Image 1 (cartoon, helix red, strand yellow):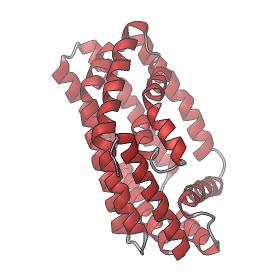
Image 2 (cartoon, helix red, strand yellow):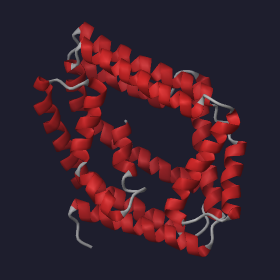
Image 3 (cartoon, rainbow, N blue to C red):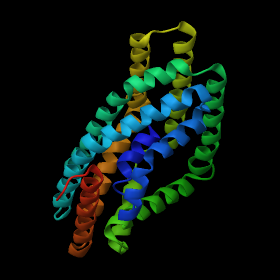
Image 4 (cartoon, rainbow, N blue to C red):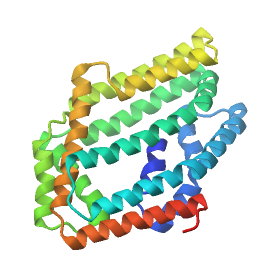
Length: 284
């Protein structure tokens, strides 16, 4: 899911040259990312690289033009004030593209899930534990004020990619959003643990039960649905609140910007749209 996110975010956070370089290298990045998690074995390598290359070609031809249209729409939206509903609508558009990508991934995911050995699942578990240590250090160790300050710094850094240096009113808007947030990192941690354990159990079941393709696909779809829609209502509410607050915060910050800052954001979004079309081989 992180690589899927990278495929989307790479069009929204980097310089133009970095976007093109990063996107063209995405097949190798994806392979090495997967290898880091499941320790890909030699018999799996050729098929996995082929699957990734095919996916990348599909994404370039089919999805990049859609991203370009989304970015064009965001550029138009950036010219004026926005509402939280408009911010959430933009997120919904990206979620639609995420759904298209995960659907396209299904055959490859079924094959890979059926190939994983007990040793590879153990490797995945160890990698999860390593990432958990980093997550805890960033969001749970220290005081709540420390975590809030890190969230503020990250939000300001992302915002300045688009708007340029934030002025005092905009920094105040960011701080107000974080101060009012109901996001609970301990609830997020518990859901993270549940989701990771659920993945390990799902993959182990695929292997131990000798599932066929249809059964494996159903199992993977079930895990993804539980990952995106947590079964526990407390965790589900935490995720929904975080999304809603993100939409409200984005609108609040944007509406506090100057005309020059909005123009800068719109120009960057248009440039990203142009890059997406160039990467897709579309003229104009």
